[in-house]
Image (cartoon, rainbow over all chains, first blue to last red; front, side):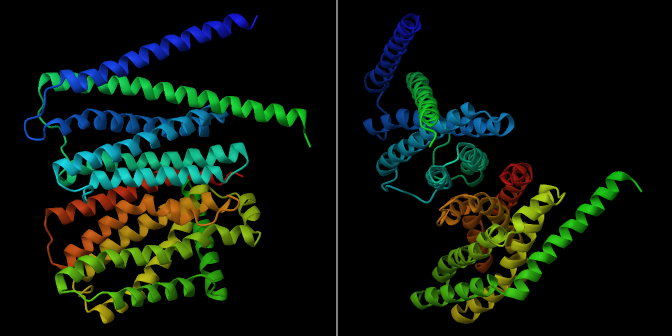
Length: 227
Length: 233
């Protein structure tokens, strides 16, 4: 009975993995071979395709984390907390990658690894905040208390996001908001953003599945050995 | 009398009782505020000892340090807001009392705003005397900045304090969560103070003021909405 869904699931996973690998390969191929070299910065500008893609994924995952946190508070189902934790972890990873790629880009564009710019500052604040949320969650044993605390903190973190998005527009910092780009650059950016979104969505799904299985295993262990 | 008017009057009475309870407890026992004030003064002294700069550079550096000291010393009061309730067995009574969570939230925010205001009343003269910076040259501007900064810090601080008070082995989680959240507030208050010292009331000054206002409005609204969930045990 179990073999059919298992094998089906295996085929589905194989197909999804193959599609993701192909999409990422296409994005990287376009990034290095199809997109034209930028006139002033040269090849270093290609970091932008990665930077914008991971920044977008980080921002979307943060909003999703807040959304799942809110859903947990309303419905009190642990599955929403698993989604919130998975999206939060992936968001933290994406913000880390955004800061690293942004730092490389800044070094070539502005001659410094870091500059006092509201959007950079806000991204780093978000990174620190996620680190704090994970540490807080790690200190709580009761699953529902952990979920509740994590959900509220996720909502507070999401409140920080409008400040990040609006910061450059308020202060006209040195961060480029929407630079003029060639059509091929636009297409490469779009493909990279879509590929990375699909990849990180898959990461979120797998992590959520892992969390759910861990929870189920802990539940079974508790039933087998209640003392 | 209209039922909603009665509910408002009752909420105001509950609010007054809670604020008076916290203030009386602090006045009688003097457990948190003296420590907070001493820590603030100590930090002012230690920082002043290190800084010997020309006026403009000093304004830039000290305006940031001033707010950092206020918020850092203020964590003493914020941390004890809910920890003392739990340690002294008051928490269960508060939960049994038919009290809207928003009233408790507002009362705690008010007490912490008062604590931060008291701290600033001690630190501002100390800063003026020790470092000779004209913090009181524009008193209304300073009161405006301090009101928004205190309110923002108290709102976020009360939320985080209530959350971390129920976490076992919490360590310094309050500071770890509070400071990333209030970074825009800290930077905004520092920028406003710096421009006030330099007497540059440009468009940028108003923008930073808007950031502080938006910060307070956003977190105050979220605080009112989520505080009910924080109080669950």
